[in-house]
Length: 250
Ligand SMILES: Nc1ncnc2c1ncn2[C@@H]1O[C@H](COP(=O)(O)OP(=O)(O)OP(=O)(O)O)[C@@H](O)[C@H]1O
Ligand SMILES: [Mg+2]
Image (cartoon, rainbow, N blue to C red; front, top):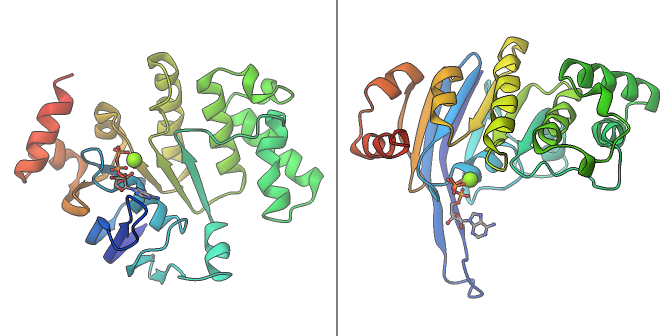
């Protein structure tokens, strides 16, 4: 996958005064090619989630453009909606419907967003849940599952639609260590599926293990982009050196 980000800017009004703006993405550019996993790393507040949301078409930049495999991400509806349908996005907070069974949660976007008939959607959902080891949970409600299982459901839901690109925003940061390991190993398995992934994570050991490329973000810019092996062995910028020294100290 080739991901190009051209001079993205995005600012928010932190308070009520619309004249007061805080710049979150500051003319951010990136041009990266990766077969499996691009990890977005960097200090808290640096703009990783905002960039992921812009790439996912969930947030519109103030200026700039995102180009995926030579195709510009549309900047308005309904083309933007069609673009979003081709992606799978998984957030820290699972975002499952609490009153629906696991199976219905996984099926819902297939039926409602992709217009797939119910029986095909059900078969496809069961197939993916089988693959992720949660088929036996199909009739349960999300509240009856562990955090790790819930995140598996969210990942199953994203995968069922056969996305061409998977985006994860800190998929394990709401989980305890055991559940984290479970979900990380699942994400590692997804490498084999040949669906390229964008991963925002604070799990440095994991990023080091599965990422091909790393983009290091700080204060709304990409300060460094390179192979994961190079980044972890010898970060070039002082900011990345400090960041790694701090996070790897734990
Ligand atoms: N919708 C919004 N409205 C106002 N401010 C926002 C909004 N979204 C993000 N921000 C601000 O933008 C800044 C960057 O946020 P972002 O979530 O992209 O950083 P991050 O790198 O993902 O941080 P973390 O590692 O803590 O998740 C933060 O200061 C945040 O408060
Ligand atoms: Mg974030």
